[in-house]
Image 1 (cartoon, rainbow, N blue to C red):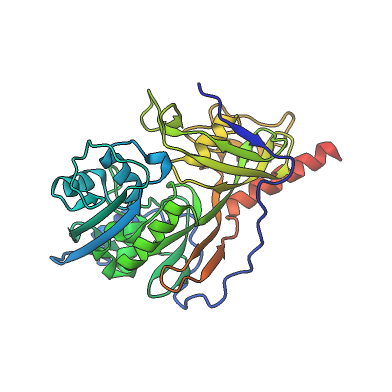
Image 2 (tube, rainbow, N blue to C red; image 1 turned 90 degrees about the horizontal axis):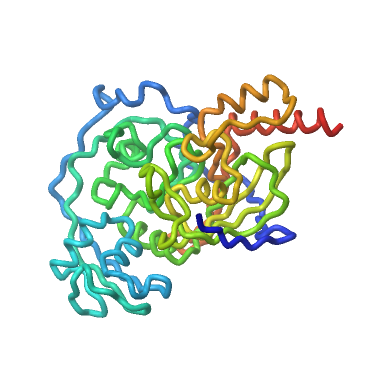
Length: 375
């Protein structure tokens, strides 16, 4: 197993300015929804659901410069990284049709591209007509005519996939903003795992989506998470370790040779007898990145069904804490802070999401346990 290059700092790796609660929230903000209603998967069979059908096409015009770390790779692989809002198969088809060029030239998907080359995409995309709009409650933190910021509850899958044909965030977004049927992936530019809670931004127009994707690629979007991990971390640091698909267990990711570059900055917020409350700032956004990086470091997240391994508790712990740790229903991970430039006005915008109740309750029990033994 590779050893992650970890740069440890005595002080916090980054400082976070506490953000006051966003003012001027939309009047359509609903109540907090935690957890997801149990009957949400049945909504598509009620009169609250409607199938989106349209024959309209959406013009797509994108361009991006190949960064140094992607130079020398295949064109289809680079395009999948730079234009991640589109599937690899669709990008490959556009390359073959000459709609995605490199420095103005038509290449094959398998051709390599050098750092500094400019990829240009000029294509049309048929609107997706099989997605179902569903009246699923959303907690909206901010909304205007270009973007939507939501506070995602645990249990909500972001995008339809095998085993989750509907009842997802995408289905809820189509009900709230029907015009998203004409935006690739219904405006979703980044994801949270099913049981990760917290802030997500969604683009309501193609222009907004393009600008947000550019910011994500430039790493100018600040995404800060909080987690409760197993084990006591002494100090903060940076994990710079590539992530790819696990060699044997395909549903898992891992730190692997030849994986995609992945960088996470972490700092300690509070230590307990056998656990640590940490804050993690993403520099990249790989699948399961925080879960994989913290596990690789030796500190898996509490409740993580894929990476936490065998259940562990503090010695002689209070029975309530033992039960809570044993039955914690999800990975203890929350997208706490989000900061980005508005895709049209350019104004820097910040949002903060309060910790969910299950997270707060576990912190309270861990604090009580520490005080009982430390005095």
